[in-house]
Length: 494
Image (tube, rainbow, N blue to C red; front, top):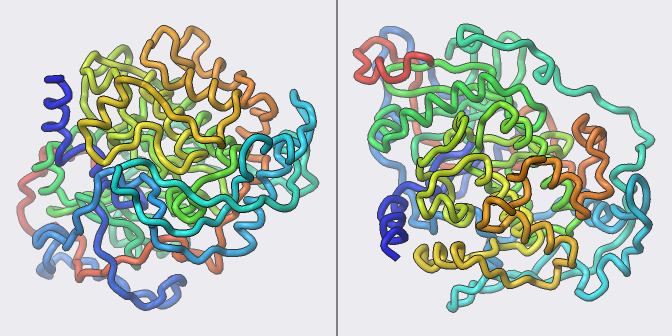
């Protein structure tokens, strides 16, 4: 297939290697032992260049020592390093999974035994295993699921917290989203990527912590990502959804671009999927439903995300979803032909260069649901040529975790026929929300974030970074505006 070879050439160094707000895209920085810096109380601060000082070596002047990793970082291999589980978090997630169908709106009681009839109970701990040489997806060892959790649609006896204020703000102009670098204290790195890194920062006047994403201008230009970066800024400035990371503002100097966004303390959904290997269907359903609401919000504004994967889904301090990394998001009124995304999540119409619209996000939602329940993507293959062949063939081998209803939903999302793909029909996302798999979900309460999440990320202090990997720090100086900027005309909105 000539078009697959063409796709492979285009994607060899591009697809899946973008930086996330907290993750590292397709390349992982080699880890070295670091001191414990979970609390920002005394972390090493990074100097901001005064007008007269010379900058230290900027990120990318000497490329960081990246290890060669498969570009599908989001794949959850069974030989992933064992991570220390927080007992309370794991127990809450497990108990949520058992009682999620215990009654309430639109659904009848189903016992835990009936829920898991026909297959082993899905647990939250797995024995590390080697990745099979055959390239087949990894398999996690199941454990019994204990305890009970109130049904999601049933009112909870707890004090509800109001939605974040950012969701109620009026439309912002570009002038409203400019900040000054010297307004922030800069602390440790919480993520790295192809173009730079993400650091924890604190606003000096308010004491509020934010995530500062730093992009090296030279790297962005050489990778031909200028349009994507400018689009990311515009889209983040527009989005005020409780399920999408909020951007405070941006700025730039001669070397870097800076995004200042809300700090999402829970880290990546990928981290928890790697820890537990797979989620029980009720837990996967909770995250899928909140992602669906975020996609629905963007599609209502003619924005397609195009970068669904667990690394780009963060969990806030209450365990709710926050989509991040809008670098591939785009305003599309009809169709677009841009080749971008992560290989395992590419829809057939993207691979075949047919032109596409919102349909690709619904395909990707199907991949995400499958990966959360199974622990690996449905068309998993280490060889990208075979991966694309599998996507086009559309044949799925269903693990026992899928019952008839979940299989029906994922199958209807992962159909190559756009006239039949769920979410792409005349009723749009309503067809997905009304599918039997989501029958018991109270969408109004979910949209108000009134339904308790299955996982509550641990947080010791404000600005806690314990839910993020540790990365080697390099001496950086930010804020050089004394010398000529060769890219001044490319990023005027920053």
